[in-house]
Structures are given as C-alpha cells and as structure tokens.
Image (tube, rainbow, N blue to C red; front, side, top):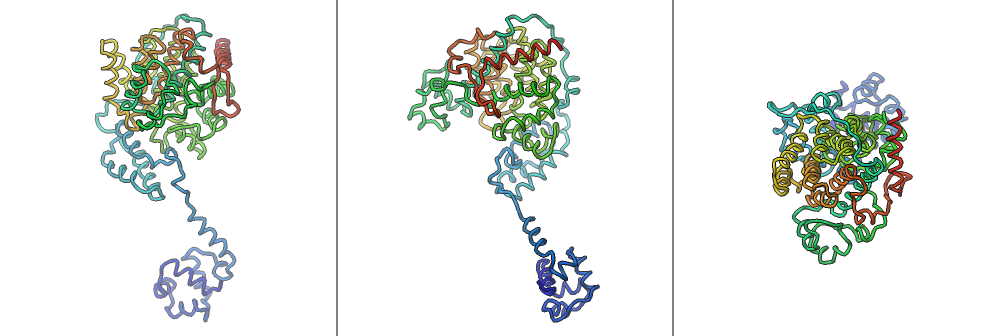
Amino acid sequence: MTLGKTINKIRTESSLSQEQFATIIGVSQQSVQKWESDTSTPELEKIIKIAKYFGVSLDSLVMGNDLRVVEERDNFNHLKPEYSKIHDWEFYSSDLKTEYQQCVDEGLDIEMYKDLFFATSRLPRDEIRKKLGDVLFEVVQKAKKKEGYEFIEPSDLESIKMLRKSRKHEKTTLNKPLRSKISGAWMGRICGCFLGKTLEGIYSNELIPFLKETNNYPMHRYILSGDITEEVLNKYKYPFPPKRYYADTIDSMPPDDDTNYTVLYQLVIERYGRNFTPYDVSKAWLRYQPKDAYCTAERVAFRNFVNGYTPPQSASYQNPYREWIGAQIRADYFGYINPGNPELAAEMAWRDASVSHTKNGIYGEMLVAAMLAVAAETDNMIDVINGGLAQIPKTSRLYRDVKLVLDSYIGGVSRKDCFKLITDAYDEYTGYGWCHTNPNAMIVAASLLYGGGDYARSICMAVEACFDTDCNGATVGSILGMAKGIESIPEYWTAPINDTLCTSIFGLDKVKISDRVELTLKHIEKSSKA
C-alpha cells in the first residue's frame, strides 16, 4: 500500500473530509488531495504529525511494514462471543429480575433502578445487554442499605459467631451405634433425594392432581414407571423423566448434585484434611467435576474460579443466586464427620458455602450441618432444629423463617396451616421463590416436625410440598437417618438403590454406599485421635 493510499485509509476510517484532515495537520486541502493521489509526498514533519495524531507507526505510514498486523489486530478487536451459546447461569444479565429481587430482600436501596433491571432483561442477548448488566452490577455493588432495614446478615465467620443466640450445646452419648447412624444418614439422603428427583421442577397445581390420580395422595411411595401413562404425559405440562428413571426400573441411584457433593467432600477431606480452606474447596471443584455438574450459584462460582476470582469474591461477583439452596445441599458431610459437635460442623460448612454463597445462602449450609451433628445424639426434632439455629445469626431472615415454623409447631398450628405460612411467604412459581434457601429450609423443618419421626411420612411430606423436591427430600432423609439409624428406614425405600450410587465425579462413576459409610467412619475416627 502506497503512502497516499495509507493516508486516505486513515482519513476515511476517521470519518474526516479532506478539508477537516488538512486543518488537523495544518496544510491546505489541495495538499491532502495530492498526497492521496501520490502526486506529492508530505514533509517528514507532517508524516510525524499524522502518525502521532492518529496513533499509527511511522513504518505503517512510510513503508507499509505492519499494516497486516494492524489489520489483524483490528479484526481481533471485533471478535465477540456468541452470547446465545452462553448458559443463563454464566451470563449475568440473563437473570436480572432475580438479581433485583435478591437485592430488595437484602435491604438494598435500588427501587429507583427497577425499570432498568426489567427492561435490560428483555433486551436481545448481545453485547449491549452484557454491558448494561455490568453497569447494573456496579449499581448493586454501590447500593446502600435502606434506612430501618431490620436484619443484620454478615457473611464472614467471626461476625456470624458474634450474632448467634447464646445456647451451649450439651454433649450427650450417641443414642444408637455410630455405624447405624452414618449408614442411616447416607441411605436416608439418597432415598429421599431419589423420591424427589422424579418430580424436580413440578408445581403444586400439577403434583397434587397427579398424586391423587395415581393413588399416591397423601404421598407415601416412590413414583413408578407405571404411573407415567400416555394419558398422564398428554395431560400435564411437567416433563416427567423417561421410564428408566423410576424406582421399579433402576438398579442404582442415578447421578444427582445432591449426592455428588457428599462424595466430593470425602475427597476434600482425604486430600486437604479437616483444616481445608475455602480456596481448597475451589481447587477441588475444578479438579473433580465437569462444569455441567454445577448449577446456579455453583456454576457462577465455577466460572469465577476459572476467571481468577478466589473465595469469597467468587461468591459475590455477578452472582444473582447467592442466597439460593445450592450451599444447603452441600452441608451433609460436615455434619456426618462431626457427630455431637454442631459448632465445628457449622464452621466447616461456612468454609464450603463461602466459595459460592453469601448471607442466608451460607447460613442454610451451616444450619443443616449443625442439625446433623446434633441428630447424632438425639432424635428429638425440636432439639435438632434449635441446635441448628444456634449456629446462625439470630438477626437473619433464615433464623426468623425457621423459627416461625418451629414456634408454629410448638404452638399447635396444624400441618396444613404451617405449610401455608411457607407458600404465603414464598412463591414456588418463580425461580427465586422456588430455589431460595429460606422456603426450602422451612419445608425441611416442617417435615421433620410434622413427620413425627417417621422416615417415609417425613420425606414424602417434604417432596409433596414442592419447591426443590429432591433437595428437601434428601436433607430430611439425611437428618432422620442420622437421628434414628439405618434400621428406621424400611427396605421398601433402600431396595431399589442396591447399595450403589452413581456420580459425575471423575473416576467415581459408581460407588458402593457401604464403602462411603466406612470412609466416613474412618474420618470420624481420625478426628477423635487427633
């Protein structure tokens, strides 16, 4: 390319007329015409001025040496991802309505931006929407608390400890052999999870008619392949799983995130020990499972790990799901390996939860871990729930919500009216209500209380309530199995599982549940000798 053509290219790409270009360089329009037609050459002083003003090298002007590089760099600058190919959980502006609702519940003063949140969420999925999402995240980061907001909800461990209700745990002896309890916790979790897995995502307006139609109301058994007739498939909007995923067709527990984490944290303890850190957890997530094994807040955290955000920043950066149920379902192993020590169980749970969650999202995991540690010593569900509440801030929304369920039960409120309190406070028909920590923790507490200690009745109650069915069935089953031992779980529930758990963890496609129990006992024994 000649010098004249290079000057012409610079001028036209800058949207300048020859007259405007001439004014900038300090020459006449005729001079520019001659330069561009290669009938004359600018003086060295003018060439330097052009190079400096338009940010190009002298080589590119005079010799054309790096024009190819400049053109390639220009093309590179126009490279953009295909936003339509990015999963919603990894694209912050895909769920700005959730972000807005989360901020409101956290007491942030952002109502003036509501229309912008909602309008941006309706835009085409492109670079503009991404940039607006980034701006709105900055709004969230800088938002102040509304005056008079009643809750105090820190995410750091020391502040959480300072806000707990003073309640010293009175350690007692185990009410059943430890092996029975650990076996019951593992199997109780897996069976409860499977009960809810076939119904995950169904809403009450379809679940209750379906259960009645299949003679399973009140719910008292697994969903069977024979329940899923052509008439059922045509009648209901809910996409029932293929018939190979039912209690009468399986020969093992299929992979599920609710059970993956319990196995995963055995690996964390094996690799890093009981003093593992949140950063160790982040490394384990990247090491042991594919990205698709993680959902909502966990998928966001995984993305953030890859992009260099370490805990606790990994939990906060562009994460609208930071108070959802994901951490709560990861709590169990920390309760299993700390029988009778709810404070340490909750502390381990905090180390895990803080990689992906904040505030009530963290408290949910601490609550469940502590409840399991207490359940190792008692089958009194009031004591179990109080033991869990003692490890989270008494100034939090989660404390208020679970305490409401507990007080309602103690005060003689009926089961129906107690569950109505939950559905009045949280809307199962929105993603935010369906998957938030608080309503699901309330369902767990209510099912443990109104289930009367009966395994089948309790897990069925948790699943029948809808919301996050597999998560709640799993947590209720885990706590009852720990409290009452493996003998309390009828063979009807355990037989289809065949002592076999499938996972998505690398190298552990199928594991024997009995082997997982033995490893848990080994981890407990090691801690007692330390």
